[in-house]
Image 1: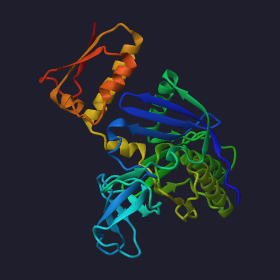
Image 2: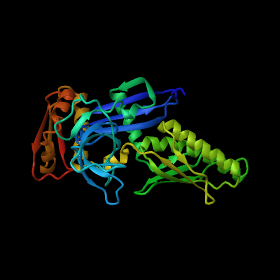
Image 3: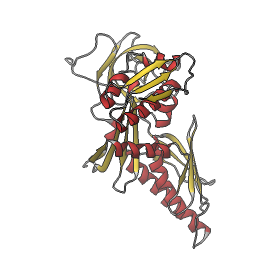
Image 4: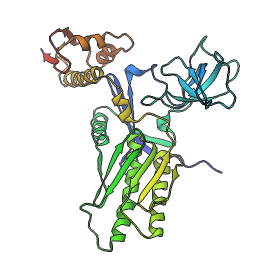
Length: 359
């Protein structure tokens, strides 16, 4: 069987101080996928597809698997048929990234004996392919100011819980610890036929948009959709098939789809591999969020006037974060606006009250 054709997309890249944001757009100019990388997390977060040398820590109570130290917290979880002795070293690949209070799920891999490995635990090699670009063919890449403006607009839409349905109506999407709940509402949608026809046409448009929204938000796991009620089984089947096709299109993988229940609920299970945008932002400290906002404003001001000198008055909390040597924010800022920014510490300033003066 031949491999499925790659989907042609345009990639928008906003490489800012402290964060790189990328958006994929389909041939209908609709954003379909989002990736955000916070530079402070480089080397501190195990990413999908990376290969590590791990050391077995202990077995999970119940015998379903074992925890392994990969050199990055939290420990990974390895499902094993035959338990490995505690302290054993093995090579593993990140199958599912860490999320909320769960560590990453890992799987065993076989590497050549002469593959370079760390003396203890740690990264052996990066993913063979960027997970963000699996299943697509980037035909155009846009960077710079235009990309930054577009990516910012997409991020604003991703944060929204209410999404419009083409032709009228809306869907609401809410992520909980157990599942992703989606509600379909036909409010404002005009109908020229029966109530059944209204439900069918709205549901068909809705599930296509839901598949795209889930991909863009990076949501996976158990998804439950409260559809508009349909009595005809043939109509229900159309909606199920449309949703399955949409998930295959946007996620590039087969997903399990249930049947519409008597209560009008449609369930799907989407394999999870990477953190969602909301999870990444939720885990980001407030001090770093504030720093990124300041970096963006400094970049804007510095590029508007190449001769402008900028003085930033900050408090103790932000100053402490800026002193972390693991993230070279000063080098990134200098590469964009030169040596024209000076940070001054004022113990009286609280986080969020920082000021920027220009000379």
